Amino acid sequence: MVMGASRSRRYGSNYDAIVVGSGPNGLSAAIELVRSRRSVLVVEASEEIGGGARTKELTLDGFRHDVCSAVHPLGASSPFFRSLPLEEYGLTWVQPAVLAAHPLPDGEAAALFRDVVQTAERLAVDGSVYRERVGELVARWPGIARGVLGPGLRIPRHPRDLARFGLIAGRSASWFAGRFEGAPAQALVAGMAAHANVPLDRLFTAGVGLMLMLAGHRAGWPFARGGSSSIVSALAAHLTAIGGEIETGRHVGTLADLPNARAIVFATSAWTMAEVCGDALPSRYLRSIANFRPGPGVFKVDWALSEPIPWRASVCTEAGTVHVGGSFEEIAASEEAVDRGTVSERPFVLVVQPTVVDPTRAPVGRHTAWAYCHVPNGLSADMTTRIENQMERYAPGFRDVVIERHTMSPADFERYNASYLGGDISAGAMFARQVLARPAWRIDAHRTPNRSIYLGSSSTPPGPGVHGMCGYHAARSALRHALR
Image (cartoon, rainbow, N blue to C red; front, side, top):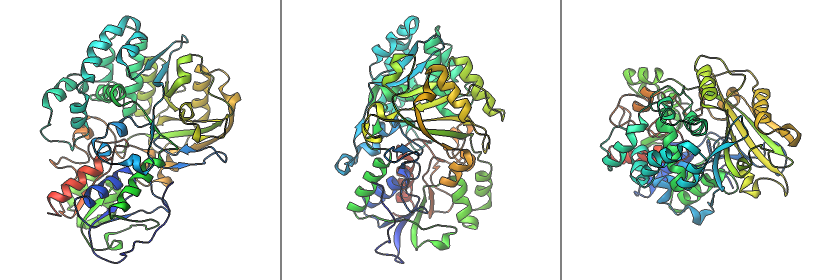
């Protein structure tokens, strides 16, 4: 259950730290500060906590839909989340039998399973190559995860593991797919890498795809039972149990709107932080933030369904996530079109069907699903027909099982969360420079030039995902500098 509006018990008091924003990163920052024996208040503009991890009845009564994030491979892999007793506060991870599937035009499908061998078996001619290139990194995932979920430009704790990962990760998805001969393996790479929301010929897109594969093989691609709001509810319950405070319904327009504190951690986009802080930050840093580019937006459809999606490829019926887009070439063309400011008639569509493994999301016998496609930032066009045409292509009769639908455009996402500028749910584009310098070229990306102000959102390393690591790293930076 998502926590509603509350009034801080110490309203008007001084705090060691204020955290602005109550999504997973904000709550993670607050928990790390409190367990380091600092007094902390989390403030949230909305009447409920959650940020990008809220669950609502968007279509019909009894159908619970995740508004943004829904599947959490990096949440299950997060070193910070794993250090917390979140299961004591009701968080249960549920894993689908098939982590992710990728239907192909010939009626077959590639699929990602927890088991590397099982995944490789569906890749036919490329099975041995997959076991060699991906399988040998699976055992190294704990060390790799600490690197890729780390604070940015630092000496890694597991340099050998990260170096082996980097041999592929720094390349483009086009290069990575070229290591395989068959369409299934190439398409699987495309679907994974397209989560980066940049053209597949760009550097580091291979790293996004490989990271998601490795996370799946080691930790799965789980749902939070009951919805993503279960994650923030557990984080909030733990935070308040150890002494942190949360206040909702409090808009922060300027720093003067906040109680006194030695440190302020913004779990918002870099642009929101800059707007609130104004001349409390030096002009050179503000120019860097102004030059930090938002990424493409997304257009999302939630469906209430009378029965499961009628996928042509049977493996898709058991998958928590389905990447709908066809061949590598089709997906690459779709992502390239978005980069040029247009949209494809056959967009790459990310589909999530939580009721495959979590029946709490819908009335008995019914189902929910959501899907989104990438679109140019701020696009106003309705993509529902294109998305559903893609669904019909791989699941004939899909529209016949739709009871109700709810759509969100890029403008809707920005109204829902000001950090999603133009519908950019990553809080900053993930092309090479902005992977390395996020949001500016600084050794400590979470520390601003003002020693009292810190940034702990997806605008900082390690970037998007429900893992809490951006907030955790910001909290550690504040503890080293402002809160010593």
